[in-house]
Image (cartoon, rainbow, N blue to C red; front, side):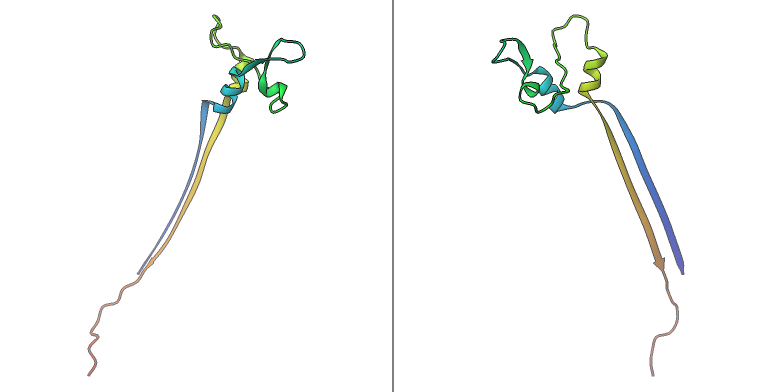
Length: 96
């Protein structure tokens, strides 16, 4: 007879992942109908007032403010449990 027990917990944090939604919003620049100035569509429509514009042609790269908006912390978490009971018998099962 035997009894097996197993517990596995898994947690991982992924760093520097870019949000597709944030990238699209940061690049979607339109003219403000009232002023004619360039604004982010998501800010104009009220979808994402925290949107930070991203100019991919900017010569100095990307700012910390842009990175904070564009990156997304991702987490993976899992748990597995095993409970296994085994029993066996040996003998003569013949009935007379």
